[in-house]
Figure 1 (spheres, rainbow, N blue to C red):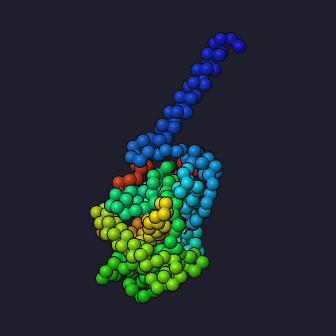
Figure 2 (tube, helix red, strand yellow):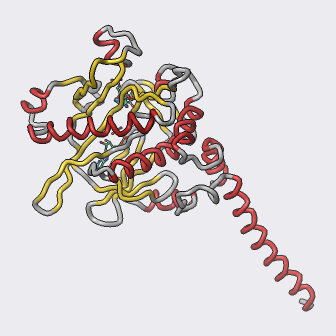
Figure 3 (cartoon, protein in one colour):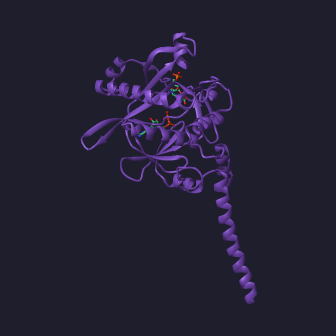
Length: 305
Ligand code: ADP
Ligand code: AIR
Ligand code: ASP
């Protein structure tokens, strides 16, 4: 082969590499990662590869749990799947996993800074976070400031009625049974938690409510109600109760203070549409949304594969 032809081939190959790098950088800028504060550690391709390599521990309705890199750790992967009414209704909200991951990260970090022990260690990528493995207490703690949802239905209280005081309810975590409301007596009778743990759940739930109500109020959002999950974390002989799972618009009711617009999963439950715009609006007001539209990020991830 003549030397000129070899030069041309080398130059062409080199130019292709540069062009590829350039395209990747432009894509990153387009999708806002370059300006986004939290570093995106893995690309979506790496994420997919890691997912298939990892040992899956559990797949739930909205998240997948994988074995973590260290004993006692788990990788929590946020899916775009949405369910309601204990999985009677199913759908996909493109980009939801990305948004819930960053909203939950933001809130768990803030709660950690307030001294509320929780499972969050660090965010690993757009859809994954590293968490401490806990033994989940099978009791969902529901905190309500304003009547809505199942409380309104159960007790005939008009949605939107401000409650005279914050109400803490317990539900038994069981999809098959529809997460029924239970009393402290049930929890003690069936050994789902002991008295000290129930006190802790209530104490943390009220502190979390105080903090979150203020945080959302500052960005023009009313915190109507939300759900928490806690777990037992073992450190040697010690067992402590820590906050687990996620806090995101999937498990909170969030209403715009001025317009009353719902900015949470009720948009999906009640077929109101605009779910992702609402979730992104929450993240945008919290100041944590990458500048680009997350539904585009999710679509881009799909076409890249
Ligand atoms: P579900 O199981 O209700 O369908 P998800 O799809 O959100 O819910 O799955 C996440 C699962 O992981 C939940 O069952 C939740 O209780 C559990 N979980 C959350 N945090 C932890 C943790 N730190 N350790 C172990 N399990 C956890
Ligand atoms: N929740 C309860 N179970 C699952 C979830 N996500 C949350 C809802 C709502 C609160 O708990 O998102 O914010 C009360 O729900 P409900 O349906 O009992 O009124
Ligand atoms: N989390 C439950 C479900 O996904 C209940 C709900 O959100 O309506 O079905």
